[in-house]
Image 1 (cartoon, rainbow, N blue to C red):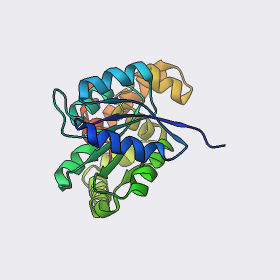
Image 2: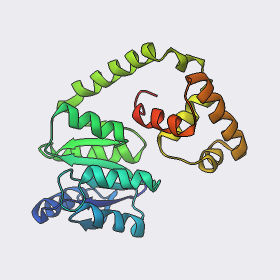
Image 3: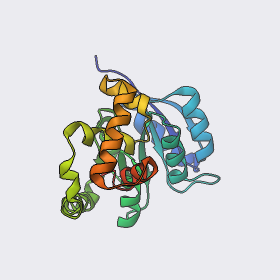
Image 4: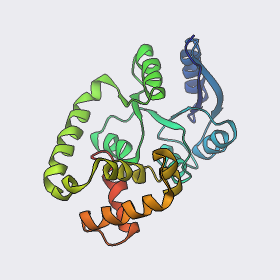
Length: 217
């Protein structure tokens, strides 16, 4: 039997939350643990209930979807973030993906697309509404251009590249070490080597580089 996927919904419109909950829970694998009407409440519930997925609206009072996502990443919360939104502008899409959002789904999407998107993200994939796939192609082209404009990336070993990706997820040296099954001092050495190869001055500059170029890594 397939595993259950736990979810928290955050949207400031009760009727939207009600409809979304009905759509999600029509699938036996999906379980909504709680609902929030703003980003601050969503964060509180996520910290308390530890869901696998949070479905966030972008436009919410007190703390919007972007603010909530940034705070969750800052806290290194492992919840996977899906934006369910009306916004179909390319700049907003790219801002969401650059931040580390795993799914970007339009509210106008068909029911099956919303459900399939949540399942895909739960399995570690990225998911984008079909009508916005051209934006995703554009991101891939941007990644290829990034490789050309940052030739020093080619100097990194596969391990260093992986560490850079984990740094972009705001993971600490000890967390990276645990994931790679090495001593945390080994990670410190790798970080120093990465800085040298990328010609970055210090670990703050390394973090900034990794976060700003997360998708291209």
